[in-house]
Image (cartoon, rainbow over all chains, first blue to last red; front, side, top):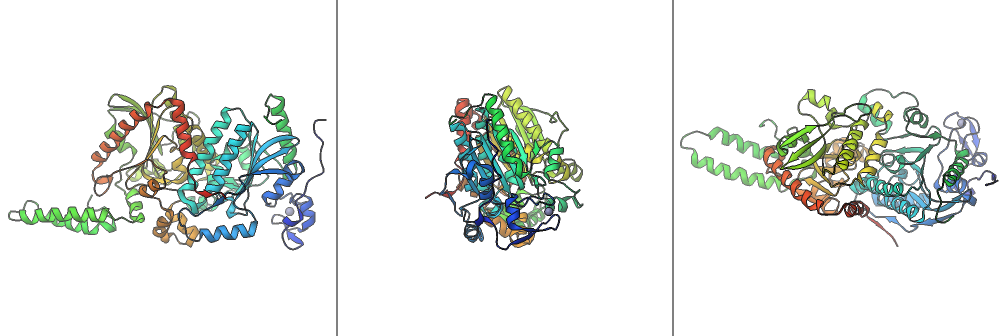
Length: 282
Length: 314
Ligand SMILES: [Zn+2]
């Protein structure tokens, strides 16, 4: 057999929030946190996917939860002198122990080397300012230079980060341009969209995958539902902008439970491999 | 036009009213001469000292020239081309092929529409995905026949609606960003009015990016920013200051290549002169870009966007 099914990976203890019990927002069930953690933060009763940190994703996606992180020291500055931005950055850093909204690097999935990036909602909504844009762009370049499949998982409700103004907007063009070059080299690019991925992130690198996978019931779109409701002055239909809605409208390839994403990725990487794609490192 | 003065133009308006009263009256020639001099200096003073919010108002001025106003004046010959070949023709984006002084040029631009009926037809310049897909189709046409591309940006943003989401607003914008990066012909971008976020950028990836003097380009509208920051859209003037969205700001950030000067009082005060300035900028830039080998042109284009961003590394 080419790969061995491993025991389901779980989040590290220190990533489990305070308190022992949690209520499921969807079904109302009171859940024991440790049990939830063992179940990859998917409600055992209704299947609702709780939002999780980039660290937990690293544990559940990559072999042994191991990564080689890139651009570890990159940090945001406040290029516009924007109201309260410095405080926001400081608070987010303290709260998350992250330097900004994305972790990028090299890892293995089922033995296949990949270049990966994961945006983290807990850092200013996973929004894209200069640091997120630059790290994503460099990661895509790294994938191109090393001939590694590029896998980007997003949890970015904020889209382009307002506090960095036009610099944030231009990161959309920067990351997309790198993807154009990656694409010309015939290197696979896979998106994993999680709740929520919106606006400037969704309208750039998160929509450009050769394969686009989404977790169930994630909110995915360009304009936020509240703004749409205000604009058209009507209630939005149930399920609007959710993963299943995008699947139905032809915008994504598949909706995959968090518990199965790793296996799906391994299958895809294996098929690209059989089809003749070879990583430089493999 | 006299009923369309902005608040900060009041002193100019008053003087011009006085001038209009005196025109043709015998014996008032001296006074008229003096007033004309005065109005000129007041205009210069007011317009050399505009706040960012005042520039927003000029960029959104109801008399502001739109893409088709420029097309009429810049092109010797122009044919509009319609449709994305997939779903429908989106009138919020106009596209076409034309000639400027013997040079064939492809044009793609937002179009807001002048009167109420046309505004509704054109959705106030807010494109649906099919608008961006039409733009991309026309960019590919330009590439196929080696024709330089001009784009004109003037939109509040991509349309926020149910159908727009159903048909993949995000995908349409993202795909344009990706494809425009490597289109094998020169792309010259003019921000002529409002550069509204992703809906603007989706036709804004190019080799040269120019902004008209009183245009704006922003990640979010000042109203939207104010609602988020202060839960009050009336704080928009303050948000405009914080976001730094004027041509001068973007030039100082190194994001745009040049500012295109407007006639005194704004583009709408002398549309022909504005069109003439844009036309000569187009001709000069096309010459400049056509002398660069294509592969080098694309490298430079991608590099230009690569360099945008402010951060620190240990
Ligand atoms: Zn549940």
